[in-house]
Length: 198
Image: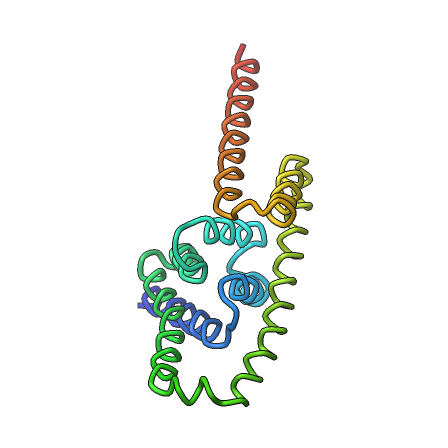
């Protein structure tokens, strides 16, 4: 019974956390990822910072909205498939409710100068949060002390900003380099094991 109650408490906390994060997040996936890090890593201690970095990378490189992708991973990590369903429901309900209400009063929202001003102010806040996400992700990449990762980060930034290379192309190239790096590491560790046995 206690185990069931504990599981229900985790599911409720997961739903509540993702619902509140989604309800008060303006600016898309990058913003919610930053808030998820603060909630699940710093406040609740459910994930390590490295795990959150992995979740962010997977959520960004997978098809679909970043918040939903991150919710799937976080929910499954915390409580399996029921956790995934609770996190997805918590993440998707607020935008559905808000957009349904806005669609009913679209003409009034569009022509209201107060709402237009509020949205402009929110853009400034969103830009600051995205900048915070970029700085935190860059710090985490530098913390790995892997020259390959740092070079990939700098190269991807330069290719996108200076050369205008598409983000999808950069993601695929980084994925290919990452897979090659993992393959090399596995091969070298197997070689080291064979040498130890010999």
